[in-house]
Length: 194
Image (cartoon, rainbow, N blue to C red):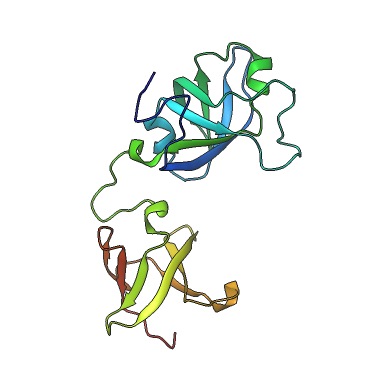
């Protein structure tokens, strides 16, 4: 049964990891999800969440040997402080919710809500070329840092071996002139010697 461009037999090419199931919540199959974004709209916009097992065994590992379902059909998802609590169609009790502990949650990028003008999802910025006003190539965005008031682009030039070789450019209007997702480029007011 297809919905939002995928079904249980396929994995969408644009799947993005958006959170991790950390525990059961209550006795009726609800579970808690730690979102990876301050505004977890991607979790709310998709009614089908794809799951992958935890990367490693540890305190958040799946507690029983039941196989992890590849897909959850979400009935309800809502804010709960810094977490999201959710209920899925086939998870009806606490043990079922506990069996999801540690699962990594993915949703297709195509199901994210449209970002407001001049706002961007981090996942869309990673990999963009960064060019300064002089036309000099500074590198590519390899990640972002959330500092609270604003984000900071982590830009690595070709051949950058360590994080110390990266440029950190505040993602604010004072330094960022333009972002072109179609051209996969960010133009900045930043010198090569910064």
